[in-house]
Length: 386
Image (cartoon, one colour):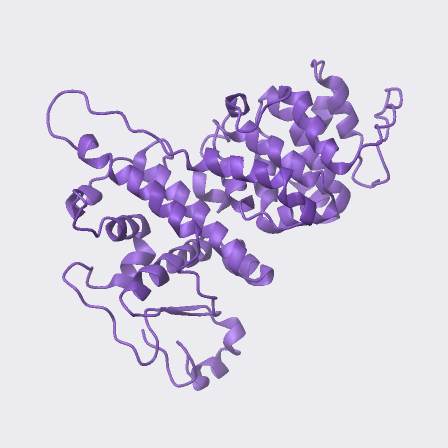
């Protein structure tokens, strides 16, 4: 609905009864003096359609061109399920989640980002879809409003990445939906996440020197849900947290904790060294994460590695030697000789040596980075972590 005289979306008398604007979360389709857009090419309620069916609305907005051979009926029949990232519809939903999270992460103050995009799954989904509603509605000279107020994001450059991925999918729809009993053309999955990992790798080589916030960080976390790119993403995260406490704080603020906590349930041997390395950086900085780790039983993962006869036992034992109560340096595990002191290297070299110890020296964008790991536990939905 439209806003009242007390500002966009809420009147003074109502806000006073509920404890003030800070306690109100409101999404409105337009401002106080605006009219809702009406057009034969739009749904009757554009705002609600964006909030409830964002992928279909975003695709309709992308194909709104006289040169497009994709119809609204084709979009309504796009194959797959939102929860299955191995299908066209599921992959688009995954990319949309990563892009809207990235736009919010780079546009909102950190406390507001945490409140709207990390505290509640339903609220995060609504505000991600609200970013889309703002982008589409402003094209029709209408400005959706919200409490808390959000900065304008309709011109953020990550929307270009979304349109590129959406158009690549739309270009395949006629062949995917072609009638006939013969075999249909295989779907070509997007290279979006691999390209964003490469952009993050470039940032580690160049942007990290000036401590500029890497805009790809929310996307890197989403890539942890992918079995194909998980090892590469973890290696890059290991190099990132090796920069120092500043980087670890950024990773925690963007929401890394639930991702790597779930990965402790993965039996993949190739993830062990880099997981231990990342966890050692986190528990050395934030003791609340230590408590959550023990509460969820994650400490058993590190205990099992200390006693497991694996080829990687030496580096794993050294990494596990950072007990939660001691951040001064590696401590010997019970029954083991003290570990040799680590070489005096710069933090950036620490992360680079980690990557080399797991997968050897890999060039930028190397396909060897895409070695698969084990999937997340069965029954865990892909959108669980935002």
